[in-house]
Image (cartoon, rainbow, N blue to C red; front, top):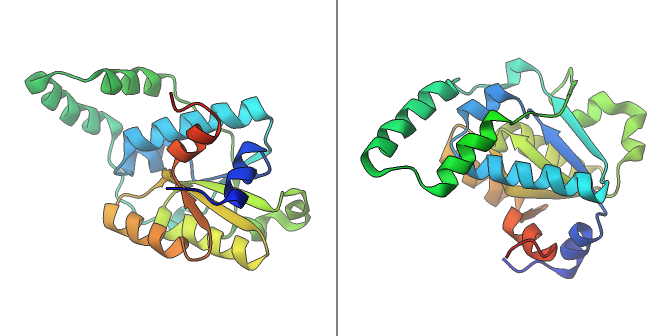
Length: 197
């Protein structure tokens, strides 16, 4: 994907606020794209720390979540069956090693589905450009991206740094959000930052 000049400047200049929604182990365990999400999330966390970018983490009410919880242990057992037949790739071994050391940021619990309702005057501290990551793409992420756009922010969604238990809903939501936000891949960010090699 070729980014427009405006989106490229947002990333390369660090001119954004980084928002995490529902980045909890339970949500991560139920998403369909664990390795892709983990690698993208890990890269973005390192990048925003290096660039000193403002970031916030929010947990929305449990009643909003409708995904079936699948234990990560069960996921790894299934993977191990595959590994025993063909062997693990270097990328899969790195994923497993990194996952053991994986921690998520402390989060603010929200009383409503919108992070903006819970913030009150805190919203004034946000930059114009807001990058979203987290779960679930088709519900909590899309809802807050729509509100951000309505409030005059320029939302950016990292397609590999959001996920859902349902792959088709995830991709349908990304297509819908592309109509009122930038939808980019972390590989685009890596290329802009010179980290793609």
